[in-house]
Image (cartoon, rainbow over all chains, first blue to last red; front, side, top):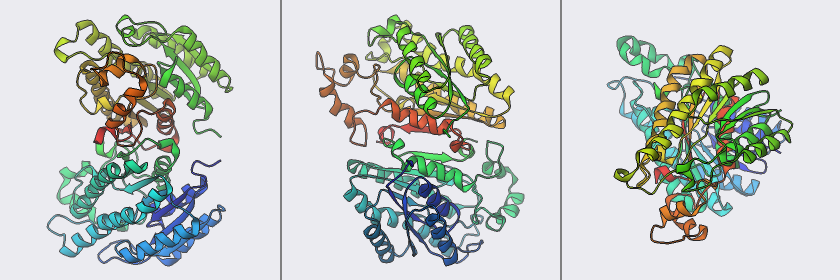
Length: 270
Length: 279
């Protein structure tokens, strides 16, 4: 018996990285998956975009676990398309129990280097896209009599990490959104928690994704310590984040809500 | 393969309630147990609820053994550092190592205005709930460091370790103190791959909470409030529509933190509180 056997999970940003890992970990423990991903670029993002091949690979990996998966190429900023993907997925898989609002982007720059475009795109994808996801999925959880929502924030959703002003603002927004949703949805037995990773070994966390830190930290060395972990590791693996998602998604956490769940190797303690 | 297969857990306050539940849940997932409990009445506490007994501790032993796990249990007061250290050292000698520490022992005295709390009540609560936790980690840390294999320390705090609770000053102060200890240890011990986290339960259905004196804390105008009368008042403090949670809910959180699934989780205040602290 898996830890989420018989449940259905909706996951955004599921083509690769943490999102794919969440899909696989939940499927390993018995869940069916509704997966969406933009599968395309967002301007100014320094690391390569996910592709439709990536999303197809997630489908293949979930199906290899003998679980069902419905995958759609969708931008979480496009409310109409997102709603259709959720509603169609729920119609095909029968219900919805778990929502993982994971899709996000990260663009590094000093406070005076951030353009209005970078500000707006980051807020649109990371905060508005997350709001779209939760607001459009929650009615299915209510219809199901309860559920678990996990919103991916960041260590930068609890701490003002340097050279990430729009990212920090969007992720603090997700932290607040999680607590507000938690209180409004509690009467429906829906739990809402936020996940706060430190660096994760994914394309976003790759050298391409983070190379801009080098010059900025060289110019502002006193801020470097803020990015360090307390535990002696450089980065976490996607599965570490997925194990926390699994715990929060399962009935083991049936009375955990409005929690800021850090999987950050102590980054926010330092 | 259990989620903590092959690990050894040191648990204080293991005779009943959350502590026993922790021992059983970890044993179900493959851990051996070193259990301690004061296992006798503490005079300040029996005004509110009866103390655990040696029979309770023996029952924990029986239930762990029924799961085919080993358990070394000792009757020890966490205020007595020498006895606590001896119990742990003896347990480690027998079971080979210690990987998980659950500092769970605690007492709950309440219903006095802060300026009316007696010195002896203040001392009992702080000595058991805070100094006892420090004794527990003080005894365990040298083992964890010497083993060189990391470890997971979980300190039981409370929603009262995050929020103020009127007429519960010593308990609230002690549980806030536990958070300070946790955060300090998380930083001190990180270089040894030892993780330190705290758990913050809302009310848990144990003898400590399900008794008339605690119901009266919530319903001061009732002479003999019942559990049925208290339930909606308890529920009003939570976000989720439940009055209290069960010991197994806290044990499941402990299990997650104790397991390698949480290998990079440290410094976390893990609230199992149905939304109490953010409401």
